[in-house]
Length: 194
Image 1 (cartoon, rainbow, N blue to C red):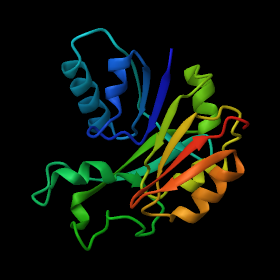
Image 2: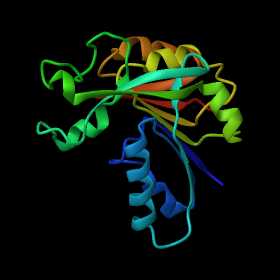
Image 3: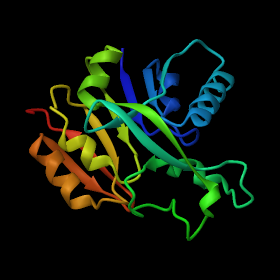
């Protein structure tokens, strides 16, 4: 059975179309209201039985807890696209969640459990990945640099908007991928010999 893993799911533009082909899906989203919304949307959308696993945690470069920041969905400044920009709170303004756009009271934080990608895959019992998407608003390199690559996704899609595509491409190519760069994402296809 084919498997996809989506890291940084939010609750829209997901890869649940793979369920139509009988795939198993793993959705990783650390923000509680977003994972709850995603679960509801996926269950309501699909008429036939599907195998969907929802993981309310963050993926990072260590195991422990991490502080996430997000825009309060009840703010007067709320716009739909902001659902997808929750991020690890590094204290830097490296993504759109900042007080120039939203007031200080509109930005919320929550502490969540976090795992390395290796630990997460082991805990979730994932032994093969046909497609993996990593969209974590600037934390992509932290995750991928600290991954063992013992399990290599056949295809991988990584957002590069907040950390640049060149270091991601180099990392993927070193691990046996042919890459294609798009405006916001970089795609990697595992070479047959890798």
